[in-house]
Image (cartoon, rainbow, N blue to C red; front, side, top):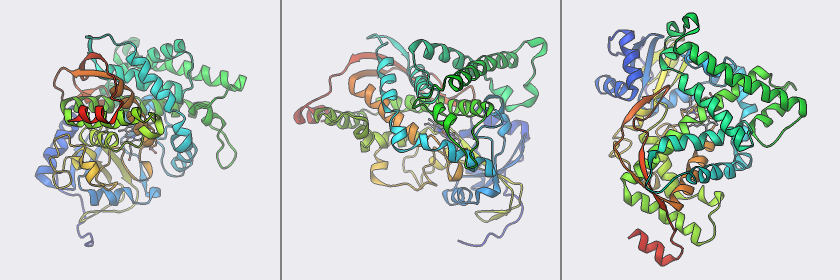
Amino acid sequence: MAQPSREGLPPGPSLPAIFVTLAYMKDPYLFYRTQFQKYGSPFTVNTLRGKLVIVTDPEQAKQLFTASPDELDVWGADALDPIVGPASLLLVAGNRHKRDRKLLTPPFHGARMKAYGAVMRDAARREAGRWRVGEEQSFLRCAQAVSLEVILRAVFGVQSSGDVEAWSRAVTGLMDSAHPAGLFFRAARVAPFGLGPWAKFLEARAAVDRMVFDEIRDRRAKERYGDDILSLMMQARYEDGGVMSDADLRDELMTLLLAGHETTAISLSWAMYWLHRNPSDLEAVHKELDQLVAEGRFEAEHIAQLPMLEAVCNETLRLNPIVADVVRLSHAPIEVGPYKLAAGTAVAVSIATIHEREDLFERATEFVPKRFLQKKYSPFEHIPFGGGHRRCLGAAFAMYEMKLVLAELLSAHRFAVTGPERVGRRGITLGPENGVRFRYLGSRVPATSAREIKANVV
Ligand code: HEM
């Protein structure tokens, strides 16, 4: 690679910071795409939090993702702080991040993670059990119920259905009250006379905090530990023998909830949307699922290995990445393409823009899951879970959940997606604007013989 020759910041639009921040809030994909078309990669934008260098090239993303973790810090963290709290894995850096990530990693991998497969499948079945034939509703709302139940049972260890309902109400109240203005703009964090959206948010947060701290205290007192992630966190030891404080446990629980609930629900909704807009891909998935049913192997371990189902999840996350970009603040000079950026520069990888590049993904605006059967993409080209030392901790968990929930629903049920969709802001995330409306068409009998499977697909 050529030596970086340029000092200073890459060029970019000379738009006022307030305009950039509002354009980003409205539609980050569109904003980045437009600037990339004008300036190439990297380019610089002015934001209310200072200058930000945006990378839309996989080689440059690699430079950032493989830079030394000791030299990278978080940036723009105060937007999430009100929800997740200062000890959140999303907000800590350096040794603290390394130490906490090591403690939190085991339950999200291997056999421990796979143990949550039953929770995921049960949640999907329970949700489908509520549907009535002919009824029209939002798939996103159904997926939110499933992914919230998964987090509450697998992470928080909530057990009875009554408790799941009470926790769901409190948590949904908190997420619904998290208005983007209060998170993006510090000045909007005011509650005059205890009124207004910020006051509502504080009230909802206090309600969830009370439940979390009561639960932690009760478990400690009764030594009531199970296989859930909260139990594992409460019993885990740092290298120096210390345990996580109650305040830190609360912050990590809120982090896992924020990072893992809505993200997975939105991805599931897009997958359902695209599959029902592309019948030949849906048929290919049906064929794989029916084959497992016919062979009596409709188990999580086999479902997780189905190539077409995996390709569908990967393509959904490519076409509709839930997180538009990931940002790092560099404490040391860092090379990005032809630039040597000074210490203190904030650099973002625009996930969405990389995923839209025609030179990497032919017919990039279309849903083409089979591309993942034909080619292996590098961890700097297909990056829905970010990259480097902060890559999504729950990536394997999310993929597992997507596959199991899709397998449960698609093998046994029929749907008609009823309306068009486009990306819109949903609180602090972006998702399908209309929630993926669908009509439930009733149960589906999987083909059980080789002849039937073939006939279904032709
Ligand atoms: C389809 C679903 C999901 C998507 C698209 C997604 C995406 C992401 C992205 C882009 C990041 C930032 C990575 C970076 O900075 O390089 C992230 C971080 C994170 N995610 Fe996910 N995520 C998903 C599901 C989950 C789930 C299910 C969990 C856990 C239950 C989870 C837990 C986390 C945590 C703890 C972090 C912070 C990691 C760190 O800073 O070290 N995510 N996720």
